[in-house]
Length: 493
Ligand SMILES: NC(=O)C1=CN([C@@H]2O[C@H](COP(=O)(O)OP(=O)(O)OC[C@H]3O[C@@H](n4cnc5c(N)ncnc54)[C@H](O)[C@@H]3O)[C@@H](O)[C@H]2O)[C@H](O)CC1
Ligand SMILES: [K+]
Image 1 (cartoon, rainbow, N blue to C red):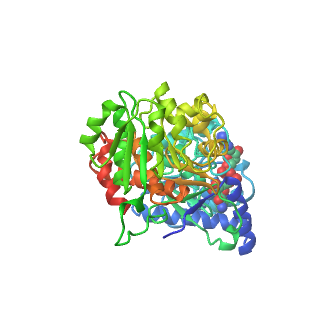
Image 2 (image 1 turned 30 degrees about the vertical axis):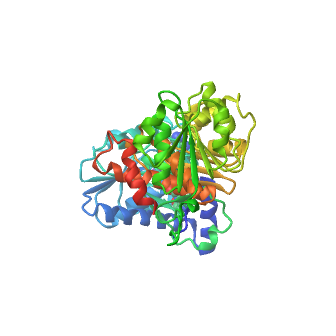
Image 3 (image 1 turned 120 degrees about the horizontal axis):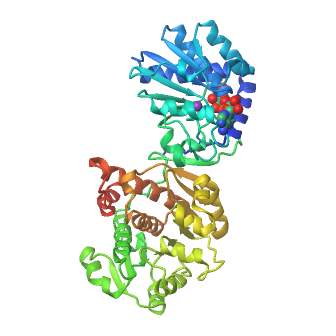
């Protein structure tokens, strides 16, 4: 199994930069030339037929990387034009030296967009406007350059970061849409989270020869897990019997929302839970039995009737279709006090956020699975504050309620005592009702199969997204949550 990839802040990467220069005993301009060469190599590998380059350069070292790329292209007689978004005489340090290098190679530099002829299909655009030094709202002049890049019918290679994406959060308003981003020395967190996950395109990491020693004790913002690094369930012994694989109790399905609870229950069964029970409104029982007779459906019309059902399960999932009426509140009040791990989702989170039930309640052994809106309610924040910095939001929820928090989004975050994990999986076809219910069932079933909560969360998020990707192979639109179930079963082994 691979190790997860560390994702760093801009500040950390600047420190890694400094340590690399010291460790390799090279001048910083050499590191810039290595960066430029790494990006240029990627460009030629991807677009060997590139007829010409247009390099958009900013006023800092990201721009400096761009000038190095332009010089390398000119050395190979590849037609190249640089658009200097910041007047070259304002450049300083390594960026100024890189500009001189480009000039020595005869690179044409224009300082207004009007002088830049329009890109065509055999142009490749290099975005070297803004990198890890970007902060705040993109200033007008730069915004025009970004819009020019995004309107062009040419592929875009972003240097280090797509310009306009914040390295520490992935937040972006005006930003470059890149096909490829070549990022140096440390993968920036913002390349894999929020809008940054979509804007970065394919991310290629270039270590620039940094020795392993420079990374020691530099704390990443998150660890990124993928297919090769997510924890997996152990193989089942030949003499296995069902009690070894947990008993999941799903609590939910108020009037009109019975399907949500049933999907969570079936999803738990398809993830390998030994037994699955469903506590729901009596009117849903016939449908539940028809849909999945393997699930033991039990009628509950008040909290009291839930009590005896809490004795036998090894994990409780409460929230799918729970609603926010007294019925749901009574069930949550009891389910959240079960003496086995609990997974809270959907309306259980909204009731918890309301504070009328379980006020101040914390547990180390529960998993909260909010989407952005539910996270905002749990924190009393505005939704766009969560979108502006989802990692901080996930950590704030974890500190407030303890346990493990799965903040679903583009780049799902998992906050736990040990830090923050990030998993990129899934696709826009999964933006449909019921997908969250499936994840709840998967998390519960993995906990029931004795995975520690953070590991269960990592595998569940990956499994859920990967099942969504497989199920969407023949189209994302019209993808239904239950389409994922066969894939959950195939992938969990
Ligand atoms: N190890 C590495 O990551 C390496 C990184 N290199 C490159 O250096 C940049 C970081 O360079 P820095 O000079 O610190 O910052 P930037 O060039 O990214 O940007 C600063 C530049 O941008 C202007 N600016 C900042 N915010 C805004 C805004 N909101 N609107 C408009 N303009 C803005 C600011 O005024 C400066 O002019 C890193 O990304 C790499 O590409 C090294 O070259 C190689 C190793
Ligand atoms: K850039």
